[in-house]
Length: 510
Ligand SMILES: O=P(O)(O)OC[C@H]1O[C@H](O)[C@H](O)[C@@H](O)[C@@H]1O
Image (cartoon, rainbow, N blue to C red; front, side, top):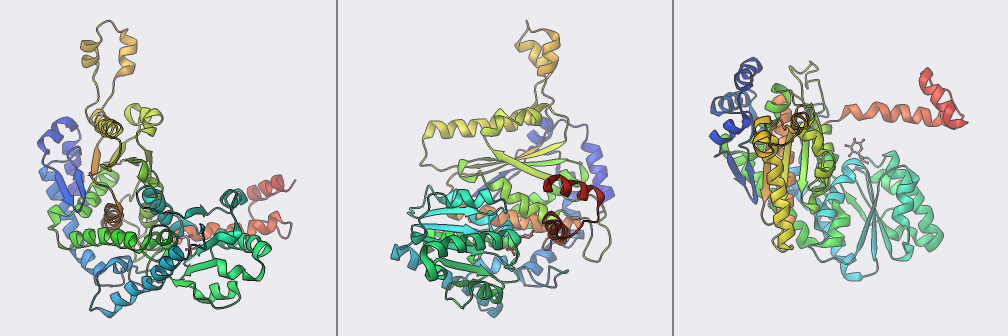
């Protein structure tokens, strides 16, 4: 099956009504662990789905799943496996898996100790990118439902205000700083660590290293930074990419806040999803289903923007988290062998929290001219106040229905016969906007683990369909190099090559 043949399927379905297609596909419901996907409202029918599945097989999608879990070097450009899944695996006979799994033990033990000691009242997490988004998401998603007495704060940006805000009102004597950097060289993290070191040593003197726990794959750099060895240096395996690292000791701050059993529940949810992805038939594999829909919408149907709407206050950070996971993984245009990919890869991805966005950008979703695909994540907690919860569900379902079915001029005329015809035209909702609904009726750490693992596998499988290596990120390097040069120019120590940048440097220096 080629892309051309799939394109022919899209052409065939182009003029179809999404409402009619959805009614034909009302059995497009798939489950894995605590999550259920309703995928009815897509421009698909069984013939097109069959074509997509054949395409996936022609890309050896089954081989990709096996290769990931066999620890093959799926990250070709860095000649490494991608082993995030091993951190959540059951105890294993495979020594490589076991070696990764046990890297969590010292940090979990330390977390329990901090919890029982009671010395630290605040944990300040410093990291950026994959060393920040994951722990931030975990903390925000769980802080209301898991008993915790520790105030966890985050700072990531090199903008000094970020750390100023995080430090505001903190008592250094009861603060533990958790510094997370796989490379131990990200400028923002080192900058923030250095500022906090100064702040800490000003207040606690030579005891300052006792207030730091560092998580890294570069322990030598961390030791050099601390000026000594420490039993609070925790490992981040080199084969676990930054954006896949929330299963690692990178989540130490959350381990301390919520405890070992919480973290184990989180890992168990991911493990359940890993098992599903490895054992489900391709037709029922939730991660593959989502990857194929991404390929269909973004590559074949030219969707310009993928929108993730979290109908869950607990998951309000999810769109930001997914931007790194999906765009850093698949925002590429070259295959591992150096040749260009045959077609367009992932579209832009953004989103927000429902119902908040309904009072903002949903106008654009409903009546704008962009080709969008929307994803509703409805994650419920049965213990919450029922009227609000019912309203939350109703709004998610209403938005999905209106996006798909729209409201025609005839319908408006029948419902509002006295309406000025000019206004009537402006009230038309074109509809035909596909969406997915991913729902969980009892959201907790287990469900969160399953959800993130699902997105990881979807990202990897979609990357395979697009022909890219989802585990490297060469595109982020050049800007860092240029910034280092420009910083010198801003300090008056050198010139910049680019005339426009030089002009701007001049502007900021005056
Ligand atoms: O954990 P670190 O080595 O500090 O890296 C932090 C982040 O920065 C890099 O630029 C990458 O884009 C991310 O993938 C990574 O997660």
